[in-house]
Image (cartoon, rainbow over all chains, first blue to last red):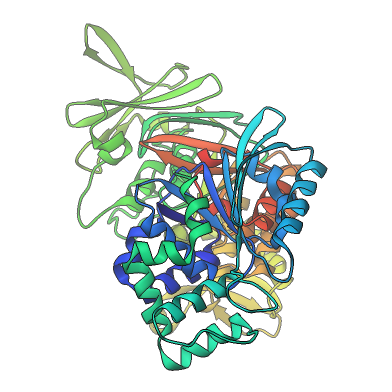
Length: 227
Length: 348
């Protein structure tokens, strides 16, 4: 899967981050040409999503080009922009957001309420761990909405984020110990920078699909539906 | 006013059409045919008419034709000729069509024949092609920059006069202004333009003059209220472009103003003045078509011209794709994380 970032500042950042991991990956994953796409990945929040998601897409083989963006709105409020997206040719939307201190069910409820408020008719087509797919209809437009919620219960934290997954990767690679009390995974991930092992973890995630799948299961399961 | 433009096998556009408004803003990535559209509109009135540019490289020092200016913009090393006007250099025929008028560029031997469907030129020549006579009013060299038409034909226009502005053409315009200075000065144009620019640069210009600089060589100057002079070439690039554009406009009063990369060298203050000027032009019945890569430019131009037609353009295997947007559409897309410059027109 190839990613076409749509805002230029975001594109610059994503290319810079991805190229840090591997120059080769940069060219394989990021698409800068003027190309058509009907699928959009929306990053709902977070700082590291724009480096992690390209790694996952790198493992999702194929030549499909998918737009990727990070709008001004964040989290569930992004659904308010859905009429704008679906007025275009976009017919598959994946929203990736952190669980934070919310419950997964509460996030699903908020998403469904937002869809209702927008007069978007929907039915649940897939319900997996922290990933749901909805078949939606807005007027005549039919589209798929995939909601992927980042965060892992197995990592003790008050707020669950995509960094939970990276901390899990660090634990599995023996870079840090399994925490025995609640941690701030964002800070813990930041702290790894000092030891320069961040790149090593990201490189391992890039090199091994199975390792990457083990760490980002809901992301793989959800983004696979975009193919 | 040109309402609809259609291109077939013209430059990089195999086929495409778009409707034009009073002010049309073309936005798109590189190689999305924006400049091609302007060039088509610049050539359409008559490729062999004289336009207010002089090529310093031309030993004759004569005013250039529209075709020669477009040729100069695309000249690569010493490669001459107008084959670049034909799609992929090999198309047999290119067509620029607007409303019910058509300008055809037909390859014939080592020439491109200029053929129209209005029969309004003073003089036509005829060639026999594919069993029928073809009347043409001029020709362009396929592999040389030579051209030919009856001199009287140069005055005939198939479309209202258009003027192409681009920062790369400014130097050619300076030579034209220099060569026609007496007329320009006597029309009072320099004083009018000098007053205008004083409103948005931190200097009080009262006139524009041509006077000797060092070693007696002539230069264009901005004359300040205190009597001092600043050479045009020493002013900011954006100010130069604006001054030259205003002089050319006041001189030629085209009914269609075309501006390529309008944001080039322009700070927001200058862009605001240009937007204001465009709005005055539109009010006076002048049609304006501009290209830009800048969303800031789109915002400013559209703010002064709420009815502006904004197009995102892209090329797909030579086919021109366009999508018409309002400024609100552009803003909504942007806040939703979709920058129209980063996507093809077909996505929308």
